[in-house]
Length: 360
Ligand SMILES: Nc1ncnc2c1ncn2[C@@H]1O[C@H](COP(=O)(O)OP(=O)(O)OP(=O)(O)O)[C@@H](O)[C@H]1O
Image 1 (cartoon, helix red, strand yellow):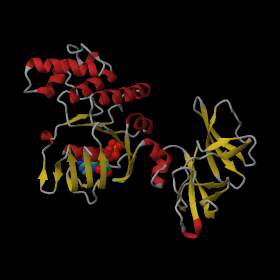
Image 2: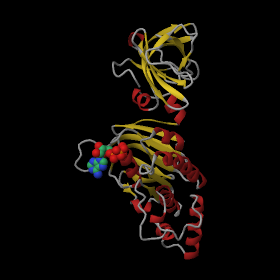
Image 3: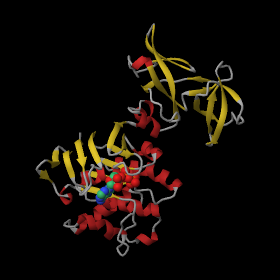
């Protein structure tokens, strides 16, 4: 691993509880990790701790095989060789683009500096922009200059904290893809903070879902979505419901009985063999529920949200259980109508029964 965090606690002075607690993760060289979670869960604090800008109380930060924050040993932020990009661009308005980028290259011979500036400007898709000024650039262009400036000194690690949050939605989505391409072309290892899950999926090789200072899961996007480690992750990412289910032994192993039929471990997602009284909740994602006129199971349309290519239907079974389903938008059913549904899930994920919110 290129960046390793072990059992990290970060506590601000005067606070009784650490803002980050017991966080461990590993980021391979050249990979992009994304931290996502509700406001105040500690994403920025974790990023700042990696940079050496927030007080680590316990645990370790290793970067490129060397310890930068360990008990009794703390490398100062300016010696960690970390590049940072924040939401507010932070370009110097009175300096040209070239001079802004040169700022991170002090001590470098002028001709080498000029070469590197033109190289990183080309990398971020703004070749030849050395002489322009920040006020002559759009928000997205300014953010790309900020990225070029952070990349110019060839940092060991890039930290990006909600770099698109000041941009409008369409631009954010495009820039998220561009940003991934740029970081990959630069061979950078990066840790990125966002609260937008589509942005996280677009950018991250690995995604960390945080809550209340703890890291609930650190995995690739597919695993986070299809095999959430906790109810919180299941709830926070994507749409779906927790449906009451009963664990039972079947001829081929363990299965769960639900109001929509019995589900077995269909692929590589083993079902636990025990829950108290066999009672559990199964996660049914909106894309696990298929609209099928032939199905004997009927559900009533409670709500519908048009999403272009599909509707997100909120449905209710005769027993009152709610479901959500993504249905191609040419199946335009009215609220109150009964439609046939069945489960088509490749992953069966269960959690201990909890009488919390039914909609994930
Ligand atoms: N300098 C500080 N001193 C004391 N407490 C702080 C400080 N900075 C942040 N906190 C607290 O630490 C917790 C985590 O904050 P942090 O900014 O890391 O969360 P976040 O997940 O990045 O939130 P957001 O998505 O809103 O930016 C919050 O409870 C916050 O109030």
